[in-house]
Image 1 (cartoon, rainbow, N blue to C red):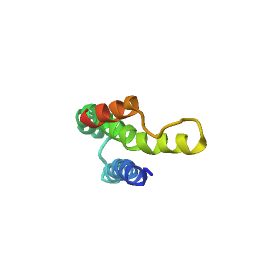
Image 2 (image 1 turned 45 degrees about the vertical axis):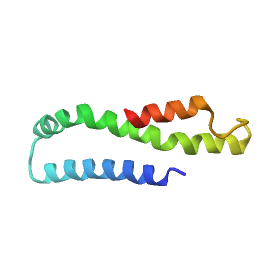
Image 3 (image 1 turned 90 degrees about the vertical axis):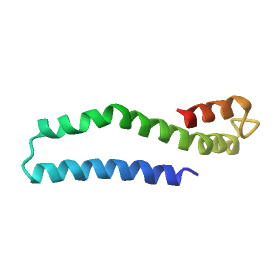
Image 4 (image 1 turned 180 degrees about the vertical axis):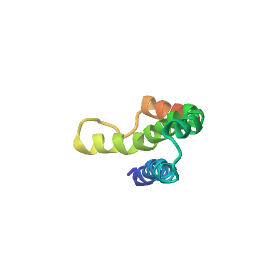
Length: 88
């Protein structure tokens, strides 16, 4: 139900925070840290967000079905959206 996605997103956030803390304790300026991280962040941060959205898509639809807001668990449209996120 999205636990692996939550672990992955938490790990990425904790890792970035730990790197920021380590750079501050090693007296690396915030400007230098950002100059090193931003080029990676241009592609990695949107990829992490899209992966999180894809990972939570199916559990979200299952919960909506169990609550009674949907009549079927996954429709063709839901499947297409999930596959589009997975391909991206």
